[in-house]
Image 1 (spheres, rainbow, N blue to C red):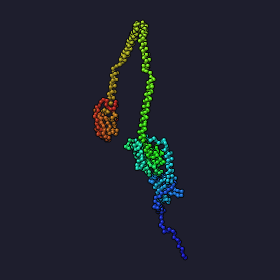
Image 2 (tube, rainbow, N blue to C red; image 1 turned 45 degrees about the horizontal axis):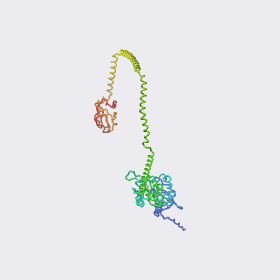
Image 3 (cartoon, rainbow, N blue to C red; image 1 turned 45 degrees about the vertical axis):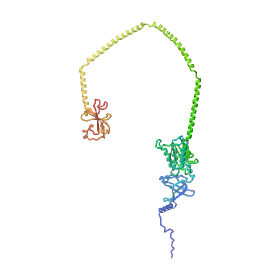
Image 4 (cartoon, helix red, strand yellow; image 1 turned 30 degrees about the vertical axis):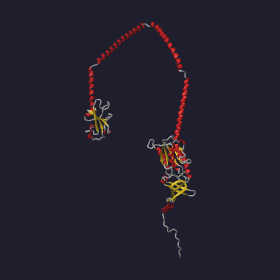
Length: 522
């Protein structure tokens, strides 16, 4: 019996691989084979950065799609941020993600695919910023007529700055501060925004003067070249500027978003220099013309006033005519005054002659005599009333004195003296003076309040220390030192090392404490 040999399984001699080994080999093959690629496609499935900071989306065309990832460090440096539906050109490495057996592109750079995509992005950004009111005409300010200092944000090596400086020299020489920036490239927008904010942050009286007007300038170029001036960071910096700003980016046919937010948009950088300062020759000519007009106006005004004054003078009457009538009235009144005085004196004389016969001294004497009699009558009544009052009070005093005996008075005096002696002894026993005589002292602060505890005393505090024979002023030179019960009998305020003596105060009868108060040690 012949056995038919079974064919061997294909690949039986191939080495076995784990899934991880195969995934790693595929990943390595993709990265070594393709390296860096530029991939054009439409962004799909973009939902913003992940919580980790990485960004995930899909690039697709009409037939295929590929996953894309942007690492966190690369995403923050991207010039163009991913947007849903935007056609872009992604530059990166082709790799794979072994966890899901998918290949992907790790994006390192991202840019819009063509002018159409840039214009779409520009229009979308324009609508967004316009909705915030950044382009409203009410926000735009008037440019200063004659700025002392002009700040320019531009490249220091291009032809733009030379043309602008030539324009300043021809029109009106002024002081110019140039903040050098890149006007094209990935860092252009950040540098321009920082320059605008830097000029606004200068203090008015600092070593670098603050400009009165700003000019952001760049020469012409394509939409991609001018894109830095369409960035949101630049637009917002221009909107926040408190210094009037002139935009001079590109040629007259070019426009960027900074043109819409600036206070003025110049068609060229040279024209911006002309707008910033007036022309010196025109100022001189205009000033001369205004001076001539002022002199002519003054001359004409003086002539008109002189003519009006002469016409008014001709219409006025002569001085003699003005004073003639008052003088005539004065002469008439003077001639009548003598006769009026004589008539008045005669009338008063006649009236006095009529009244004189009725005036007799007998009437006055009768009134004086009647008043004297009434006065004598009142005097007699007063004397009798005084005598009766004195007699009544004398009788009352005699009756009262008859009831008074010296024995009662002496008894009351002795009783009061005993009470006074007892209170005097009690006062002496309770007075703090007796405590002071036993070697103690009374300590008061600057306000006259008694100091009872050492913890209330602070360094530099003024103290008033009273002894039995006088007072001294002292000053505390150190913190309180705790004492033991055995030390309290041996140390007093007068021997405390923390107290500095001052000249003693004489003890006076009224100087025993606070104003009108007796001090207490308890």
